[in-house]
Figure 1 (cartoon, rainbow, N blue to C red):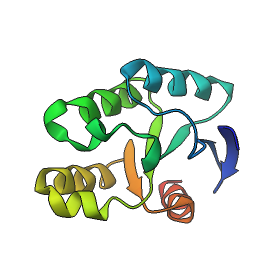
Figure 2: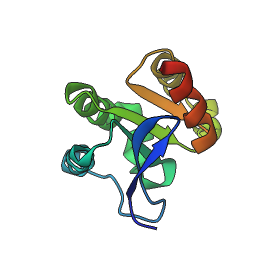
Figure 3: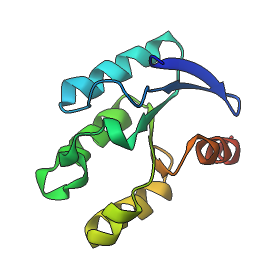
Figure 4: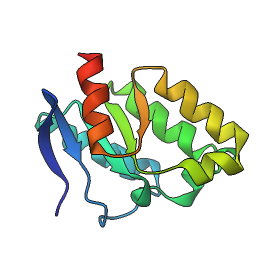
Length: 122
């Protein structure tokens, strides 16, 4: 499956292929944002596509990537289980909690949970 725009809970979402290339640079994130210009409002990125530096907050990579999405007003949904990562890092757990309380970056366990968040946000 290639990255594709899908209608999910009434919202156009660029759903990224779990087997696609890693998001390892800010340019990779900008490329995904650029792909939304075909009509998507949200990008759903599987946890497996994010470079491991994203989950190591000391690298600032997560903040840089998340800020790109906020700046371009494109919602980012990180899709997948991050419980082992958040259990090992109180700082990451706090980031996930704070992000999920806001409107621009969400961490969801699967696409069904994303659909529920999108319905609630509408």
